[in-house]
Image (cartoon, rainbow, N blue to C red; front, side, top):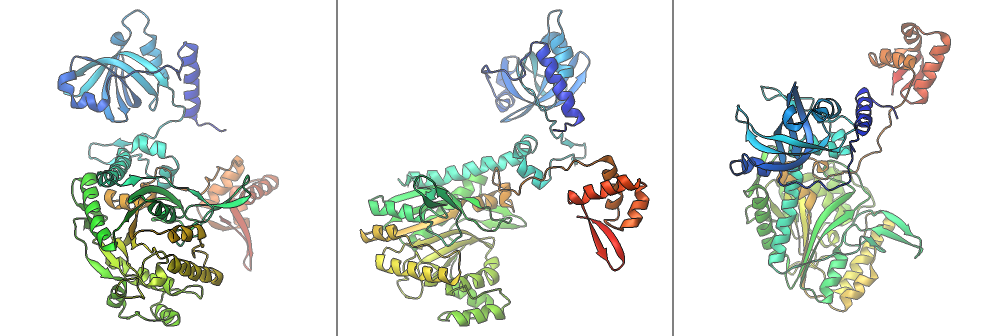
Length: 564
């Protein structure tokens, strides 16, 4: 492992601390009496009194016999004042002169005991009387500086670095922590809403023998003891409905679902959905409940029903408009697709420039039509209702039109936030719908549903009329925290494997440096500019091409080399 100069210095400091008899990673509990925010907020009460705090050193100003530092704990930051003679009242000044001044660094975690006071310039501070080293940081922390004009310098702002090293992101970017605190407020608000109504929070299997409840491609693994394939769940719907069959009136679950599909700013292969099922209700009731829930959640998260999403303001205050999906398609495309067969729909899609293929059935074609041509028009919360039967294999037939189902999707800012049904509880109809999905699978649709015969059996015992909903928690948090990327609201989003830095010789570095200014050069020209002997030149080129840092291409104009 190659260490930077700062990392080497910190390791030397670590050794010196140990040589002084100081354990840089002590095992004993460090008991605090307060948090930073408590000291700041209750300053008038605590001034002149002793407190014990622990946290990370975020900055230092060393001024001879006295120094200032900024201490950060989980609640905030405050100034601490370290006076040599207060910290070391006896003859031995090692703790100040050597430990604090020379061996501690920004990022180290310390515990302090001291007196709360206000400096001459009015800064709330703690005068340190005792200092304990709790953890020596061996990697330097990014030091973010804000100048007098409010301009930020050396910010830890590269998105990939932030997601890979979320621990550093949380250390230095306070607003990131606020996003995740708000996420917890949102989920707590939902739980509170349901628990007040007597709904039961449950847990259902994540590893499933049949991935059901949605149209999606699952992750598959193998269970050695049972010698069977198992799937990470794509939805928890079928298990929750089994509980309704079993006699529970209302159950909900915050579920981690997994779909082996593409990744982008709004999709992660692992995501969180809240699913709720309530007996003796229908989708009209569910729409009323959903808009009440989201209004409450928005107020609990932000203090208002209005949320800023990019350059738009979305208002979650109930009620929300209800628009049938076929009406939406007719409004935004001019095509009345009601009653069209598969070929007619495919033709409409092609005429509108929508990419389709032969594996797509009626459901998928209508879904593509709505997604491409209509969805983005619905910025304010809107219920899109009454989906064709082919799009909703788990949904009850519409009471007024047998070609449709009693389903709605809630669209916010042009994106789906929730999906809900009057649930299908006819076991014969359910089996037929599953069999239709099987035909799609045979056509090559790898997202078509599996047939879950045990679920059909459960329905045969009788499931009461039920309404169910799934709300995308990650997307809801994105809306209520004004984040355009799902990676911003997941602590640890899925990432490509980290590229390891390639070790190359100084000669190769020199060649690469020359090439980087041009990106592409004639091989002979580069050799001339590099000024290396034939042996070193050959070695350098081989090293660069072997490590895929550069490639040589033969063209009519000769041999050229370019950066990969």
